Image 1: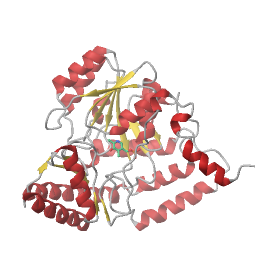
Image 2 (image 1 turned 60 degrees about the vertical axis):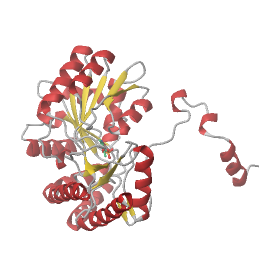
Image 3 (image 1 turned 120 degrees about the horizontal axis):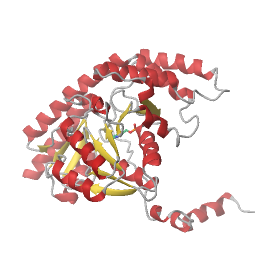
Image 4 (image 1 turned 90 degrees about the horizontal axis):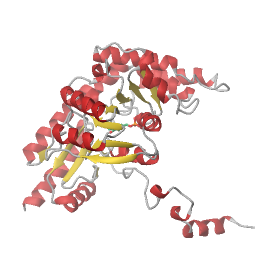
Amino acid sequence: MEGPREQVTQRKTIGIDDLPIRDELKGKSPYGAPQLDVPVQLNTNENPYPLPEPLVARIAERVAEAARGLNRYPDRDAVELRTELARYLTRTTGHPVARENVWAANGSNEVLQQLLQAFGGPGRTAIGFEPSYSMHALIARGTGTGWISGPRDEDFRLDLAAAEQAIAENAPDVVFVTSPNNPTGTAVEAETVVALYDAAQAAKPSLVVVDEAYVEFSHRASLLPLVEGRPNLVISRTMSKAFGAAGLRLGYLAAHPAVVDAVQLVRLPYHLSAVTQATALAALEHTDTLLGYVEQLKAERDRLVAELRAIGYEVTESDANFVQFGRFDGAEGSHAAWRKILDRGVLVRDNGVPGRLRVTAGTPEENDAFLDAVRELKKEQNA
Ligand SMILES: *Cc1c(COP(=O)(O)O)cnc(C)c1O
């Protein structure tokens, strides 16, 4: 009989690549920022404020209510939740959104995965303009969708002419636009998105997905009104950032009702648990309080930008709850700086953009700790 010891030994000798795994997954590692236990964690763009106690109590109430019905499958179409998300979007964008325009899943990553399952897949391609959110490429790979890395200009802005050319040349099936972009922070103009949409329709036609994970932190209005008259345009949103609920796993999209019908062809039945739906509904009851934290974080983001510049760093314009800064000496320089900041108890993100790092806006105290660390780093660099 094989005991636990033999099984452990087996683990050592048999790796992923020894399994009959899909070729494109061979030699790959899973996505994820290091989750290190340090005092100041400013690396994954989370909201630093825990949910307020009245909301925690309300979640407990709504989850208890949901628990009484857990012997049954949840509402497969999440009707109440989609209705409330539509109400939130209408209220904050001024553009009328109905439940039929909204779809929700376990994080916007799942929303994006469902979109690629329905509109990408083997024999099809998706394009993103990099550096951008690396999950777009990874979800493409996971769904067998070919990935095309589109260009950006030297200041990390979307270069419209170059992007239009890449779309015309490759005729992708799906186009990702991230606004505000992660990890750079900059938002995209509405006219640019319209031009990309037109280019994508002329080339294919293709689905254009605007990832607005950080839009609540932006100086600019949401691009959501652009869905009017553009059935191939999708706006993707999340409760992970502005709502301070990364642990909830709730993302959603707004689009033409036909897009919502399309993702239902690939979603797993009952994908959103009754507990998730109840928790998200409770959070939506407290929208005003949560958006109050967003205002504080925007002020802290602006302070980070100003102070980083005063210290002598180059900072990319940010419409998000994080700031990209540098410049360090290439990829090695940014990694060395990341390590030195970590040695001072502050975890930031090295997204692999050579010469740059990304810091999430935290509480005023956390941001002070970060600023102290990079001030010392600058002194060392200048010494
Ligand atoms: C954080 C982030 C998301 C959020 O993903 P969830 O699955 O909703 O937590 C989506 N898009 C971008 C660009 C992000 O940075």
